[in-house]
Amino acid sequence: MAALPLWQEEYWILLMQLYMKKPVGVKALYSKPLIDLSLELHIEPVFLYQQLFRVRRKDTPSMGLLWDTYADHHSRLSREAKRVRRMKGYGNAAGFYEGVDIHETFEKDFRPLPQNPQLTPVMLIRMLDLYFRLTPLTMVVGTSEIQEEARLLKIPAALIVNVMEVFQFCDPYLNRGDFMIDPLLLPCKDIWKRYGNDNPEKLAAVAAQLKDYFK
Image 1: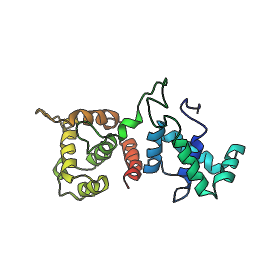
Image 2 (image 1 turned 90 degrees about the vertical axis):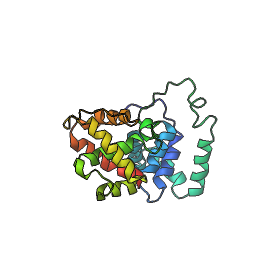
Image 3 (image 1 turned 120 degrees about the vertical axis):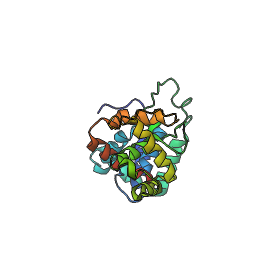
Image 4 (image 1 turned 135 degrees about the vertical axis):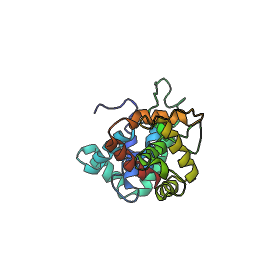
């Protein structure tokens, strides 16, 4: 994989800090700590995930030096990580990324929807996977699967039912002829276009990985 233009050598310190976070080791692709760092650096999670394996292997002089310097010196690692984060303009798109064209892609999936700040696109991905596991008659608040998802996502079960109703209007197999006015229709249509007509196993795999983010 070609080096990303936004990658900086100092980021190895932040990755080492992430790696050493308990439980020590490579974090799951959609674990919240990895996603938080990904959003912080504006670098896709899969790239950081792959870089974590480089940290684990310690198969280059630079990785060996990283381990020798920080693996048994957590206070030093913490200080260096804070130093990286104190760099001028760090985390500020108008400063640190001045003159760099940033095209947000994955970041939007983890940000609240303007239509409803309780929801994010990744939550809708989880709900679409659940949608395909239920029937319209079971898309109600009392269904155990909906209750379980509500607890995981920390939102009301009624909101999940609302999203299920919107997905029914996106579902070409239901052929709903009536008209719906719901602010969630547009974001739900977007998720349906991305996953609803594709291989359901792909959606199931992504949804299963995303569970780590909400734990």
